[in-house]
Length: 190
View: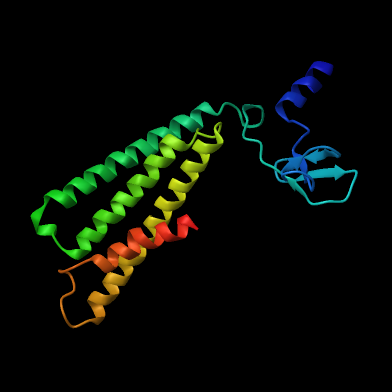
């Protein structure tokens, strides 16, 4: 029975209950809290003091088995997505019949999604060094903001195509570039 209890403690750790630390740099501590009850739908914790508390997810191999399958799935699917985005960009760039502002917007959207996924793929495990982690976080923030901005530009362009009398599908795109790449840079730099 003791070996079963030791095995259970390895599989289901008691430190799922945490309280916020007021002093120092913040964060969470398991000091003074313990797991009382747990099943597939509920977790009950008991703490010896009053403060903010939370049940934090444990993604280590103790709780959910090996993390390796999740890594394999992540790297495989993101790599496949990057390949599909590269093919999409090449098709939009090569085909001459697709030369219009709408397709230029699509190319920029594909580039921003590609950059987002590329930064995610190479930055997902860069958490050891604070500087590298910060750079990855900034690049992810910027590239995701660009993706949302280019989606907005696409919606704005389609709205303008439907409401304006003149053909706006050809001509300068400086305004769109300023929204798609510039505004995210301003937001990210602040």
